[in-house]
Image (cartoon, rainbow, N blue to C red):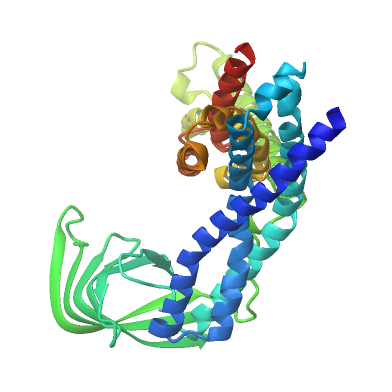
Amino acid sequence: MMKILTKYMLRSLIPNYFVGLAFFTILLLVNEVFRMVALVIERNASPDHVMQLFVFTIPYVLALTIPMAVIIASILTFGRMSNENEIVALRGSGISLRRIIWPNFFFGLALLALALLFYDTVLPWGNYRYVRMRRIVFMGDPMADFGPNQLIDIGGQTIHYDREDPGTKLMHDVYITHPDGTIIFAKEGEFVDRVFFRDKMLLSFRLRGVTIDENDRKKPTEFLCTQAPVIIQTFSHNFDLSGEVAKTASTMSIRELYAKIKRDNEGRVKLIQEAVEKREMFRTELDKERKFLEEIYNQDPSVPQNQRVRPGRAQDPAERENSERRIAELDAQVQNQESRIGQLRQSKGSSTPEDLYEFQKKFALPFACLVFTMVGAPMGMFSRRSGKSLGFGYAVVILVIYYVLLTLGQGWAISERVNPVFSAWMPDIFIGTIGIILVLKKLRE
């Protein structure tokens, strides 16, 4: 009986899962289709390159929709069973609600394993190919992926503009910010040319109606305002002409990212050892200088201090003052190293918050498959009277909450406002808690 029940529920869960997967995947890819078409039509990007960009976007979209479809499958399956009184019949025949929910939990575990494999292999591969293809598109036309109200960084300078003429690609209200605080505003601007020089790409823009605000070198607290009818602004951007890109946390597998974090932490241990060695070196020098002063101060009290010298050495009154100053400097160095050692020991490692967050997210997102099964089953039972429409509504609300928390957590982790580990798992903890409460409520009925 139990095997029959499990097979029966899986025959319902699996088709519903693929319905949800197809629905959410197509929904998210529609926006990408419009963006890719705009690249071809408005930016004259190569259709072949744009098609490859689209293909390499699919793994990223699936990374989001694989967990999303689980809640749809759970709600639709249990909603149908509740609406047709199958759950009442099963419980009336002596089968507990816990046993009825178990196939759904098993289904979530299986998807968790598949999602882990996907996040460890397919997703890093797709992300890496996508970044490489974007570089190729950028080499052909630096403005291909740059639209109004987008902020991009080129060679340490940021540039954005408010609007653009569709036909001429003329930019309006252009703002350029330099690292030294200089701000350039232009009423109009247009991309002129790109030149490759060794490992750099030089991008030139023609700006009209220009106002430049910069710090006065003679009076740093004041600004100088300069106006010009037309200027040529050139950006220097580091560029590898081979097309290879450095791997980041999003393009690494779980093993690669773990190895990177481990190397970073080992680097932290090395920094602590170096700081300890410097501290001991300064302490040794400090002890020598203090011993030297003791030899001076322990001489015949009848000799004035400013005339005391070290035994066996020529008289040099300044030698004592130099030694005292040297002691103060060495003592400060010792204190600095002590402070540095304390900071390094209290830190969790030299890994960036983004690396730690991405590493945890490679486990947290697949785990959402299991979390959504715990939420979906009781929600499906609650929505039996209103059918599929209310079930989809519940699913959308839960998914919106989950991915809002995921976005907030990423921002908080990168800005170091919240621990990266907690930020990655925060959505699972929140939705999982709701799921446990709902399951317990149904079990008490």
